[in-house]
Amino acid sequence: AQTVTQSQPEMSVQEAETVTLSCTYDTSESDYYLFWYKQPPSRQMILVIRQEAYKQQNATENRFSVNFQKAAKSFSLKISDSQLGDAAMYFCAYRSPYTGANSKLTFGKGITLSVRP
Amino acid sequence: EAQVTQNPRYLITVTGKKLTVTCSQNMNHEYMSWYRQDPGLGLRQIYYSMNVEVTDKGDVPEGYKVSRKEKRNFPLILESPSPNQTSLYFCASSSRTAYNSPLHFGNGTRLTVT
Image (cartoon, rainbow over all chains, first blue to last red; front, side, top):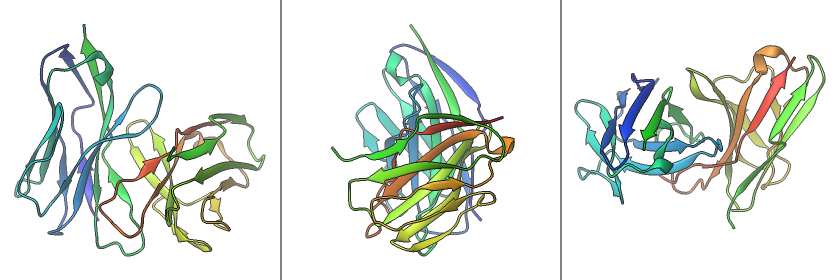
């Protein structure tokens, strides 16, 4: 079974600075999908970015980018020019294409990001 | 607007009193699922459904039931809630035809069982 590890429970960043959130995963599969979700205090789960394992190029969405290291099974999220609205809990998640009918996401424990004004 | 709607947002109940959390999506998604979120554990899957009348257990199904009589609705039923089911619950849906499509989540239901 796959596991996702987010070892840092909390991080803090100064507004306008850059922060990197770490995520590692364990799998024996060669093809899979990785996601970062943001959960603000409103509790809503918001997709931030996704990465397909067979794509070498790191995904980017505006101020958000990933550093995907397939051999190291690492999938970190970089937030540039941090804003107060980035304060939230962030979850890393894994999806296997081999689970048949179940499009299950396996989540890490999450990391709480605070942004200092 | 494409969305997954859960109700209620907050629910406080007592041990043993049956309750239902409703979930509805308007995106014509085949796949729907329930997760619970607990501090330090992330989100864990309770049940999922591939289509109408097709449901199966996730990782933590004990104490829960689901049904899928219509494509848009996927209620979560707790027939005899216990305090260890106090949690934040999320319903989610996605298109089955593209497994790289993201899950769309509802806004969550905070359940407290006393």
